[in-house]
Length: 199
Ligand code: MN3
Image 1: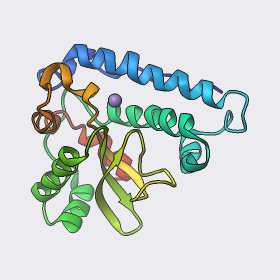
Image 2: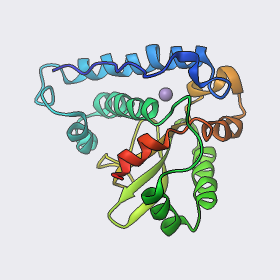
Image 3: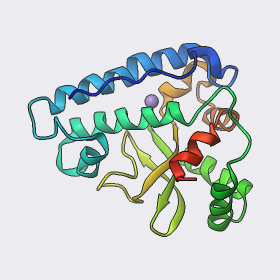
Image 4: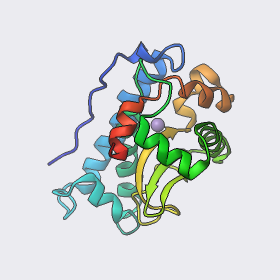
């Protein structure tokens, strides 16, 4: 079964002033839409065509660049829209907060570490909060890679992800990636992140 571009649960301009509507419209419709159709083209008629996206991604290193890049792009953006909300911001729920405190010392320390990972990822990629066998870890990946992939440096379940490709912020922020990262914290949907963590 072919993958479908998921609908957003909010309007394109709902995350303003932090993320502008025009960026959201292009990002969702053109970029995420493009990854979705190219993923479908890449797996069409192959043994991957009836597999779920997570199973496909765990073998990303062996399926070739079209599946790795577009499968990652499909999954990562689906997660990204989910972990943002117009009523976002604040702090995670008790169970996730406790795990964050345990892993990073405090919520502020975690925030700094995640923002640094996002700011210092050279070129295009993603920053992640990952649930691993040894607890929560902050990492970043190049291009459309993610922690589900066999090729990832840090492997685990992505709990929170931030897209730091220029297409995610350039219209509003141009080269000022750190301002975009700072703005992101105002729209993080901790309820959705809590659920991804399993609390
Ligand atoms: Mn993107």
